[in-house]
Every structure is written in C-alpha cells, then in structure tokens.
Image (cartoon, rainbow, N blue to C red):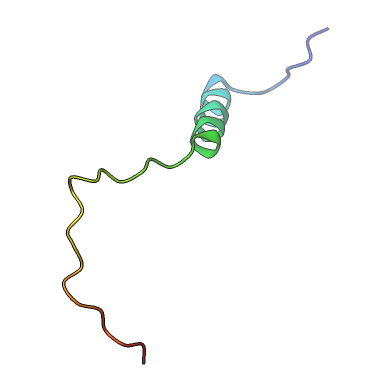
Length: 44
C-alpha cells in the first residue's frame, strides 16, 4: 500500500518550497548598500 494518498503534486511542491523558505536563514544586508546614520533622534 502507498503511504501517500490524495495529495496533489502542487501541494507537495508548495510544502517543499515553504519548508525551504522557513529553514533558510535571512541574508545579512550588503555592507556596501547601507547608508550611514546622519543623526540620532531622541525617543519620544
């Protein structure tokens, strides 16, 4: 007997894509694209 029943290929692909998205750590920002902070404002 098959363990998988009534699961469409698109559901399997979507589940795999979601698992990859959740398990991939976020990318660090590129240091060349950051703008320096010009001035700090006081908190309200």
